Length: 361
Length: 126
Image (tube, rainbow over all chains, first blue to last red; front, side, top):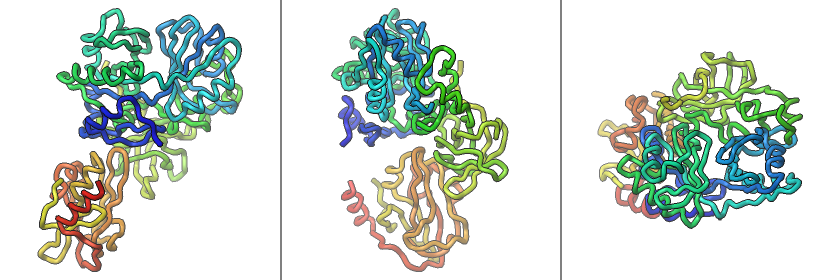
């Protein structure tokens, strides 16, 4: 039986097509459709309900040590108001989840985890907790909205005192007043565009959603669903748990070495990860033949199997079918021709550098 | 939901137009295109392919998924719609003009509904 976010009724009233996702009912699209919703984010702005995500609080003198022990990234020196991304590994060096950590105070942090992994993550975090640190799952009290697109800057400026708006990517303000509603406002997102994520008390979510849509309407703000969320992140080559990574994939194999600080401190899975190294590499593919590349399709070079796609679709802004794939390291480089087995039919593709799209500077 | 009177419909949401020369033209209904969402690719059969009534004829891809199209009639594919290669979204915009293929040498047909019965069938499906 799926759970509803606080915005369920609003989605249905707006024509949202509700689907089960990670144990929740969420809109995959509205009447506008995935392509229009995707383009709205690239050209104007879109609003997403991401309340299904999990939030886990770490608090106490040993909070930092616990985070550094669990995560591959190094949180030492992260300031209050900063956010940092990290994979979290199991003992074998495989990825349990990828998440972001907010530093709320001297000894207070909040990890934001994938909805589908929330129960697993919380159990793991509590099982490996040590010292003077409380670990609490606060997901049910917190709702989250994502406002993404070039128009988001002006909209938030019109609603929020200037000194409460985070000025840099991966920074946040814990107590921001956005259009009269208190929320945590962060410069983060999963679309490859300028944007914000807003965390509010669950009870305040409907009025924040409604207020933003109303104030942003004239500048082209529309609600967007999971379908567009996936095409946007794929176009920006952002990995998705369960696709570009899972418990059998090392962060070194899937383009996440930048979030791994193996020399900084010991963390769970470090030795196994270092021993495994990177037998695979994440690459981009763009179809040259006729067909749409999807996930879990074998990739061949000169007739030999070299890897498997992890995600794929017709990318709306780029206008071509593209996929990400995990390939044997060294087997291909950008410009190489490969073939993808698309449901029994070989479709030609070219290896291309990632990301497929990056926003104009 | 639009349901032209002059066409017949299958329960898997294909429409059929029986042409004066004895061949059949096939596409998908307004209900089907709406359910699928934005169509970005059509995997067409080849001219000369034989098809069976209720057998797989083609598939249509939306951003999120691939959906099979079933042939309402048995026969041989005599033509496929060339416009669908570069403009698959025509199926969303004009589902009854953006035909998928023409089939000749007709044999068996599936159970086909007239416009009123198909409309009622869709309403029941919700």
